[in-house]
Length: 285
Image (cartoon, rainbow, N blue to C red; front, side, top):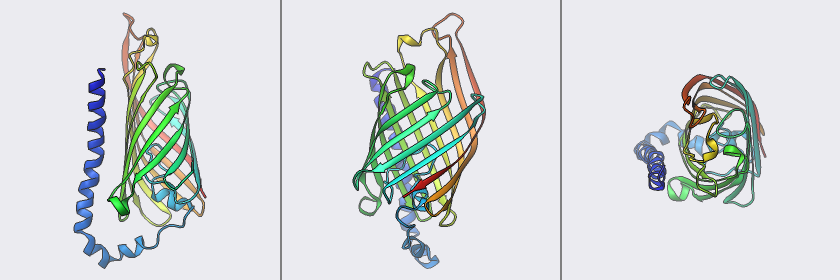
């Protein structure tokens, strides 16, 4: 894929993320008077305790894939979940850990196990830098920079990300655009993640986490292999917090397309769908 088309895709995806947030902010301003009457402002004036799992959940930090722009109101958090992916007919697992190094900077580490665009065990390490906050700028905004030492064909990829988010009373909206490439520029992937999240009570959050990944690799090492062209996960998600700990669960749909043997006369593309279920726990301090 030409690089100008890659850049155009990233810019278009970022615009899709910011547009609904701006529209929702206009609606929120129009409803501010009614909100003060209904007592919603009273709820917002009593935020979840710093370092609690409920605070982490409210800020989107316990979602299965979407990364919020806002940093944890505390020092460190971690989540781990596992389950079954019907599209791959395989056991899958995900784990995330993050520690605040400064008020604007967090060290990020995540791990995934299961069939995907790369080896079955994939590690990512990097950081998030928060540049904008809702109080001062009307929106939370951050950038991320990560290294995948085990990405496509077991080569390392550099991944950059744009992260945005905003809460409107009980409703939170979050979005990410991620683009990764190896140093040679022939292993590339584009990823889009979006999630709405609703606070039912101070301890219970319900939402929808969606992630799509598209493989743009042109590496000759793909020849003769079974290649995953794209992946899509759409997961209704729930979390229940108990002090510093939380239970998390998801059940939704998974889809993928594979092609192989790549470049051979017998090359065939196949699209598979299935149910994806995950359950696990999180903690924040």
